[in-house]
Structure formats: C-alpha cells, structure tokens
Amino acid sequence: MDVQPPEEAFCDLDTHRGFTVVQLSVMPSFFLAVLLLGLPLNLLSLWVFFHRLRRWTRSTVFLFNLTLADTSWLLALPLLVHYHLGRLHWRMGLPLCTAVRMLYHNYFYLSIFFVTCVSVDRYLAIVHPLRSLVLLGRRKTCLLCVAVWAAALALSIPVARMTLIQTCPESNRTVCTLYILLSDTRESLPYSLVCSLLGFLFPLLFICYCGLRSVRELRRRPVRPDPHNRQRRLRRVLSAALVLFALFYLPYHLSRNAAIVMRAVYPDDPASWRAPDLAFALEMCFCSIITCVNPLFSCFIGRQFRGEIQGTLTVVFSQCPGTQVASLMSKRTRMTVRRRHNMSTVTPVCALPAPGSQ
Image (cartoon, one colour):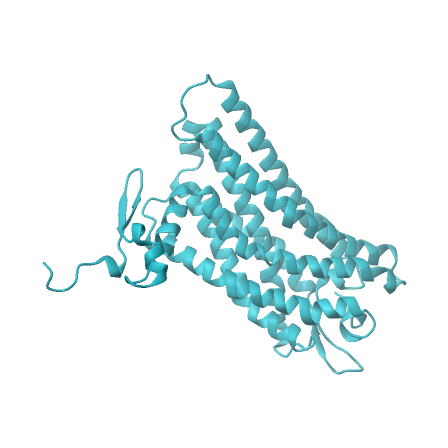
C-alpha cells in the first residue's frame, strides 16, 4: 500500500473543532465508561459460564463466544483511552496500533455473527427440531464457533495492511490511523463494501428469514398449550437481534461507508469530509456500548443464564442482618436457582448457621 500523507483531521487539531472535541474528549470518556461498566459485566458473565452453568445448550455456546469477543476488545480499550487522552499521540509502535484496530473490527463482526447464530439456533429448534440435533450437535456447534472466529479474523486481516502510524510534520505527533479516514480509497472503499455485505447484510437477511419461518411454523401448528413458551422466547430472540442491528450495526455501516464514499467522490475537498467523519467518530463511541449490551442480550434470551446471574448478584449484594440492604432482601437470603435437569443452591454467608449452633 502506498504511503499516504498524514491525515489533516488528526494532525491539525484546530481545523475541525467538532471532530477534535469528539476525539479528545467524547471518545476517551465513552471508552473509559464502557471499560468500567463492560469489563465487570463480561467477567461476571464468564464466571457464570465457567462455574455456574452445568448444562450448555447450543445457544449457551454461542453466547459464551460472544462474551469472549467482547472481553478481548475491552482489554484493548485502555490503549485507546491513553491515545485519545494524549491528544492523538501514539507511542506504542505499529504492531500494537495494528492489533487495536484489528481487535475493534474483529469483535464488531464476531458480535454480529454470534447474534446471528443464536437466531439460527432458535429457527432450527422450532422448524427442524430433529434435524437440528444432527445438523448442530455438540461437536458441530464447537466447530461452527471456530469457523466464525476464523471468518471474522479473515475479514479483519486487510485492516492490518491499511493501518499506518504517521508523523505529523508540524506537531511531531505520531498518529495511529483508521483505514476509514485515509484519503486514498482504492482499497478502503471496496473493502468496506464487502464487509458491509458479508458481515452485515447477509446476517440481517438470515435473521429475518429465520424469524419469519419460525413464526410461520408456530402459527401453522394446531393451537395447544405451550409449556416451553416457544413463541414468547422466539419473539425475544428476534426482537433483541433486530434491536441490536437497528441501534448499533446499521448506523455504524452507514456512517463508515459515507465517510469513505465522500473521500472517493470529493478527493480534493477535505471540507466535505467533515460531517461524515464526525458522524463516524460519534458512531464509534456509540458502538462501543455493545460490549455492555451483549451481557444484557444474554440475560434477555437465556433463561438458565439469567437465573444464574440473578442468583449470583443476589448473593454478592446481600448483607448481614441489621443493614439496610439486608432488610430489603430479607426474604431472599436463601435463594435456590431451579433448573429443569439440575439444581444449584446459592446461600449467602449471612444465612449460614453460626459455629457451634448445631
């Protein structure tokens, strides 16, 4: 890839005040808040996956991998917080710059792919319940997760080629570039369009197809008691997936492609890039919230996971008698999480019998 001149928006921080405010104030604030909220949520989710869930379904495997992807990105966030708080001066070299840019791209599409996998799993369980046991057994589910990670990594490899560290001639700052904001769009434009097609549009079509087919199948069946609440669970999965696509994934792809297209259409008019650049920077901030939303997505659609999270939080926040929290939670000091095939009892320390009382 040809060496390009340093990007004006990153080097001359006085040219585009709105973009500068977002880069130096809004983005580090957002990233820091997401780190402080998202990392505990995802670490708690991983703890529940490893120590509380004894029966793993296909959806459990997909949600676990979704949590792993989010955690990998959260662990890289301190580098970006340091970069933006340091007035866009990258001091950690090209390898770490490339790794951070790839991690963001990789986690973003892993999130899309595993949300899609959960939707497909619900579709198979409803429309093809017997065939799904063969199509997605335990071994094949694990292989599918490996394939999803490999596909997301392959989709992110070109980011490494287009990521640069450049020195601003006037301020002598070193910036870690984004391929979206490079002036040369010969590689970035087709790459962004391919990612939008394979990583966004196709998964969205899959989710819509699976949802419509599942609803049609449930309506076709004779009306009878539904002890498993399949229709309600299906609506939950479909609604949660579509909300994620509408709030996060769609605006991100629109703003990213708009920023690149404006550079391709008006290569000699940097002033015309400012509005889409600002929109994309704000969208990057907003999309970082996905790492906090995905644990809620897991709770929303996973009954077993939701029950274990509620039980763990109840124990963590319960206090010994005499405290205000304990008085509010006195009826829940002994909590049993019941499952269809297994039972785990979580008892707070304060509810245990005192030594010598027996």
